[in-house]
Length: 179
Image (tube, rainbow, N blue to C red):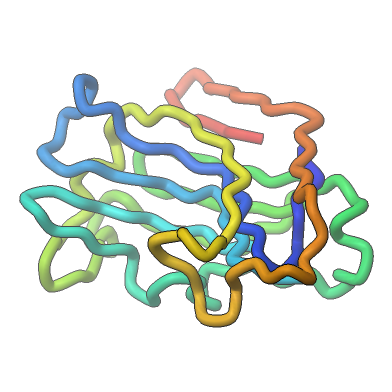
């Protein structure tokens, strides 16, 4: 449960990345429970995969609307707490905002395919991951930033990211629920 900055220049995120010494796969993987790309109303779930000098992300590209949750009432988002969650079991990753499912990604079976020409399959998304929370900003020195998202002299500081709690649950079948 957190209150995150929906504003110009902000790139807050809540994500996981594989731990090299715990990997079962040769691929490194990243699960973005949410990222906010300098938006005033959208959160986006993303999956990244890398290895052998290659990188790709789940089809759709950065900020893909197919993996986005859009707040209808967004005028006061910077002052509100919301619940951001992911359920992860052997077959699917499911992403939620305030208990509303907005993205489901199959990670086993016939439909589980990363879909990229350079890195096929979903290998690596069953490996252990470590949790990362960050409040990056798009500055002049950022290596990557969506067009028009870099901070300007007019942007107010600080950019606050408030976390009320993080909860991790694992049920008897091994499914993980991260809130």
